[in-house]
Length: 621
Image 1 (cartoon, rainbow, N blue to C red):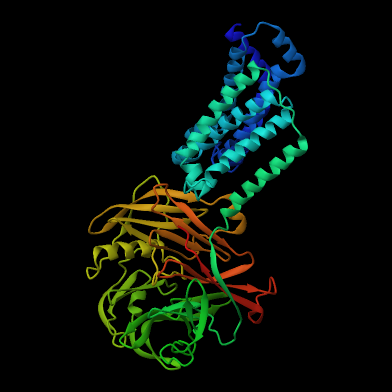
Image 2 (cartoon, rainbow, N blue to C red):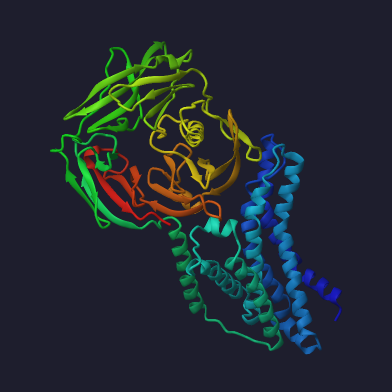
């Protein structure tokens, strides 16, 4: 038997199947390139390359079955069995000819994307994308090709053989999550880091399938299949896959749940507060957590923490906005007294025809002392100078560090001695020294963040504050006063932010007297299934605590491990459809306390018909 003749024969048998598969894989990249060309950007493809590659394992299985059937259909099988053929050589050449052809088909969209981007795309292409996401589909394609080839050697019906091979492949993909391998996140543990036991499965399986194919052909093994039983097996494996994917979007354990009816006495904000180590719900009750159970105790008789409303001084003709927006202020305990620190800005509006112009006139930093049923203003600092020449917009932030209060107004800041909040003392004031938020445009390049010029803070706090001012306080509802996106571990600094449809981590590489230098480290994109239930966006509440990144949206809470050697890993996902997550807190024992409400009149927000829920969640590890 001539080797070249056999290879030529196999290619001729597969030519129409190969052309059909090539057309299926290239339709999306070519369509995207045409759309980009019509938009004037150039003839190139980027985002549609990955979906095309993801179809590769399915098409590889089809090519394998077509390859086997070329010589194992009834007439052809009788012909070559009656000849003195070298079965092992024939099956070996058949196996590897089809495998190489399948890999060439899968490689076409990759080569097309690389070439078109080099020629027409000025921004180039992210090679990290190909390095992270291309190897896994190729390995899976090799595995599915081998399984379908082996199945078709014993099951002579092409469709059933392809289905059986795919079912076995799906089971092998699910298997690592059933073993004690600490695999939690499909994206990080598998799609990006396909190594260890997972890599072994995808390499050992093709070798075992190839050896099995040789013996099946040599000894003429046949297997008659029961379609009904096959469908039941498929349903079982589909159920296992469903369990895997559902665990990716609803795997945070609920330790306890408590339901409440809406009360008109509740303030709008906040839901959960930590005052002096005591957790308070809606300013009405203490939240007591004992043995993973939530209970409430009334605080109406406790004069130290009785419900009260913080109201700014009103000036006729002016509208008042405050910071923090969603809270009553930053809390400071001094002796037996409770204080709140708030920034109030007074806004005047002028109408010129249909145009309404806004002017910020005054800005005050105020402290309020809790006195039985009310908050009494005890100290006030006029910080209107921080507005400088810009009085059309305002951005505010504050943070209390070592009894010193940092308060930002636009690009200026004041530093205040808040040891005794009843007597605020101005330490320093600097105008127009802070820079506005600058988005990260090029991940390939190192970028710098201005280091805040405050010598009173230590280097660690200065770096943390500088990063938070740039990437945690650019929206009005920022929570920089109580949280941070910076992680400090073993003397190394990193920070995480939500960008478009992914979580990105940046590492601090170095710093000097004026700047902090950072570089993109890694990212974890959202999956399609996560996008169905809703994912947090760049303006959603987000913070880092003890090596974990927390972010939430209206009905979704996500927890990521950002210190893992497997890059960013999703540890937990909590979803309550039609609910609105209002507030959350990470407790001292590590568990998560979450407040959400459900409107019983769907689509119509009616406070009287809202039901509130407190969830005690197990913090995923």
